Length: 168
Image (cartoon, rainbow, N blue to C red; front, side):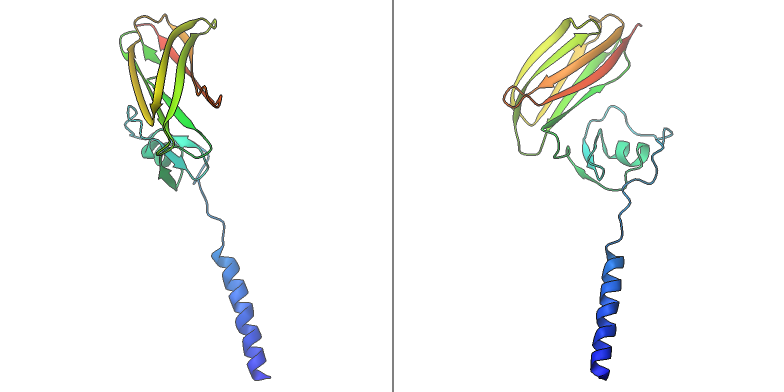
């Protein structure tokens, strides 16, 4: 009888202990952005946060968006990710566009840039790649809002980013 009681007590302790081991992991320390960060904004080195959001770089994830855990590369819920820097841009500086795909998964895509009226301003077709960086002068753009669209022709997967070009 004593052996059964000890076994039951041990089993109960195991179940209670096991439940406490599976406590909820907190992904973000706060939902309030930390704008006082000293992150290097030009860098595009994407990471996938525990909240399945792709961030521009580790500092962006941890210091600005308060994400505690992340992995290198874009999140697996995306075929590729696109970044445009700077936004707002000025007509004196080039615009830098970067696209990164999931690791070891080359993708072909077309990049289209439209003005606020829907008029195509730039277009570029890119063959299979895992990383693409494109820098182009903003001097040919009038001040305003622009939309960049990167589309994979095979799957139809698209990423859309808005950016602003200001006057000098």
